[in-house]
Image (cartoon, rainbow, N blue to C red; front, top):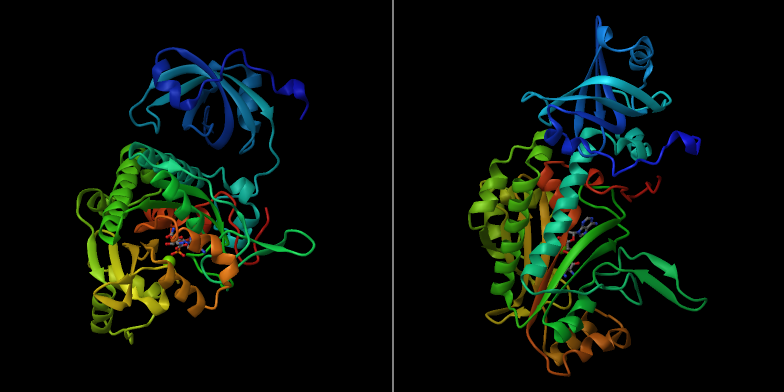
Length: 442
Ligand code: 4AD
Ligand code: MG
């Protein structure tokens, strides 16, 4: 496109979302043609600009032949400038409609590849850069952005300091099976971070209450709807907080985020046809809490062949949350199936003071966390038991030598949370550009 076609606007361009304030007057705005309907001597052009959707009514009797011709010719997703009178209309999506007086096609788009017919997921994924414009994807991205802001607000309102953890790390944090390795120098490898936790623990000794929020990498080798290879994780870490306080923090956090989305993104949830009944329950009721042992009992009664010591998979998580209308907090897992750093339960050292939060409706684990081992020698013995290289963890062990302190934290996968809140079963639609096994384009 030639630069002259994109004129510099005199003032900040008007957004569709601002139009209700202009009802009764005239307005000019720019956007893209979302879709078009024709009927006799009238054309309906729906224009979108990211802030909303605006139906523009073009009547043959009221516009010049050139504008009528442009209204006929303009192709889906062309960039356009529309001008007209703004009319309040309670049936219209944003509360207003426009009677069009002028239409400029800024760029006539080539035939839009994403048609209303059903497309396979592989096709849509290969068109992700265009698919982002569809109403459902726009709504999901708006919810995601709201959640991101709500996360920062939640922690800042409670006196947390944001501490950015590194992405290039010298060793694994959450096991070695799904590590991304990259060359750091000619002699040395680095690994993309699987979690900022280990770096937050020392920061908690400096600042008390801290959190990090950034991209996280796991070279997942299977394709599931719940796993991405690059995802965003938010992780708080709190000095002198123990497992009960951690449960309260996780519950308060999730309730606050859900309330914020219900409050500010109701339009988007409606567009996603989300049944919000259980989200309202989550926003207003105490969450269910069960121990891992109780979970095993519940699952056995439901016919699952599980016994103490088994890890819980996706199907088990779904079955566990059936019958609850809030997320379920599961605590006190067998230490053997959890990470090396988890504090043992003083009442039963076979158990770890770990916590998982399972979302209702089959969305599975959204939060994983624990109280951390604060005793130096116990942590050292766990490092050895897990056959981790002590030298690499020396700095992490050091924290337990200089004023050690009980502390706890958790991690929440942003896409897991957004998928549940939006009622979208697959995480791939909950991040702008998903990275999955066999998919890194676009
Ligand atoms: O349970 P995880 O592995 O816990 C940790 O990494 C801890 N170090 C966090 C902490 O205590 N600070 O991961 C935490 C959360 C999961 O509950 C899930 O929501 C998300 O991260 N997650 C994934 N999300 C998308 N794709 C994946 N492959 C994910 N793996 C974990
Ligand atoms: Mg986990």
